[in-house]
Amino acid sequence: MDKKEKIMELLSQLSEQELKEVLGNAPSKKRRRGKGKRKSRNTKNVNDSTNKFEEIYSSLKFSDSELAELKAAEETDKTSKLNPLRGGRSPVKKVKVRCDKCSNKFKVVPSLVQNAARWTCNDCLTGRR
Image 1: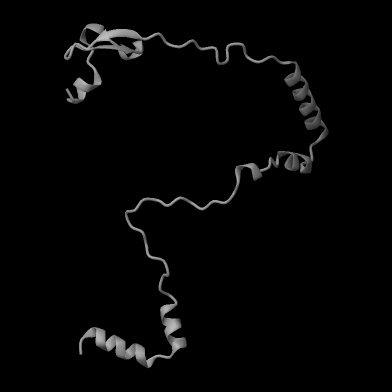
Image 2: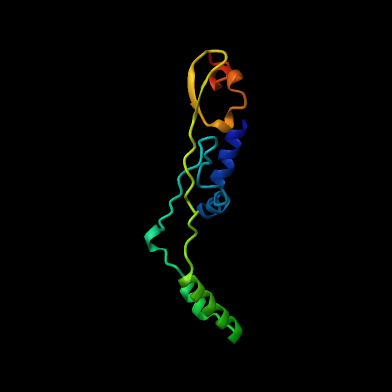
């Protein structure tokens, strides 16, 4: 008798209930190895999320000095102006350079060029040309 026949003989001696107990510990899903991650089945809708700040804020108890400080902060928020310099950054003007090895012309951000006469493109640097 080989091993498979012995196992089959032993399993035939067990009742259905004992078989379920023995096989109940076995994993029902097959492991997916090396197939990447599956997409999660998250049924939570983005529109269903609610802002719970008001609920939390209303449940907190502040002292008199804290309430006065909050009111003063609200008043200064109403009267304050937005920072005029915020988001006002002008776009960078690119510089024309010529590759030292392949002689192709490129427009590059000036912070990437240290010496325009010795500049080399990425293709020449990585050996693609």
